[in-house]
Image 1 (cartoon, rainbow, N blue to C red):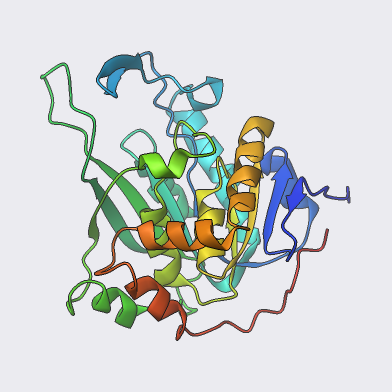
Image 2 (cartoon, rainbow, N blue to C red; image 1 turned 180 degrees about the vertical axis):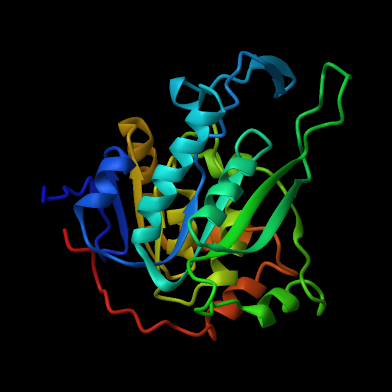
Amino acid sequence: MKKVKSYYKSKDNSFNLIHGDTFKVLSQFDFYFDMIFADPPYFLSNNGLTIKNGEIVSVNKGDWDKSHGYDFINAFNREWISLCREKMKDNGTIWISGTMHNIFSVGQVLTELGFKILNVITWEKTNPPPNFSCRYFTHSTEQVIWARKSSKVPHYYNYELMKEINDGKQMKDVWRLPAIAQWEKTCGKHPTQKPLALLARIILASTKQGAWILDPFAGSSTTGIAATLLNRKYLGIDSEEEYLNLSRMRREELESPEIYERILTKIRGFKSTSQLSLYLGKEPKTNSQYDALPF
């Protein structure tokens, strides 16, 4: 078995990056994660146009985001989800984001592979770009499928916290949260970067402190930044060195206590800027068998 080479490790070994192809990397080490968040290609780079910052721009993000037909999309999703399944603990869960371009394929593949789909979260963006053609409804949502590995093994869900931050009512599967804010781009930006508010809620809902989280399409590692702020451990894999460097800069920025606290208080979705910090002080911790990755 080829030895995996780490691209970057934080001083405490809790934030890890690997430069490589997820399809190759995941088969090269033995490790089991509590949770996986994946933001795979949506396959929507189809030469369309959108509005960004008041200007008409192309939706194309790169060759990695171009569709080659339904069979290609299904095969792609089946392969990476199968590899991720092998790296999950028996009681682990996976969250996968998407739009109409890929989410139906993802749901089908999850069912085929024996996952139990728990929810399909609709993320309603409070600040979506307008539809300049005026021939369709404004595209203002993305979906995030939450599934557990086994239909028979219970998963972890922090019901009480989700109820607490939802004014004492059961949290619904429609989340109204802002898209990425300017303060989240201080080190640069990724074309499909997710907001910390979304990842923070996902991580708090389905893991305890100390949990290991995998992101097989790391991008700028919003998953890892949220994991660090919430006292979890993270491995991100990406094939683009440019974005791994962006991830590294974002993580090193948190070495400053002032920046760490400032970013923590900016995460939306809580009743006050102090609610999250207060909760983290009393949150349950996981009994992880791993202190560090095996490479």
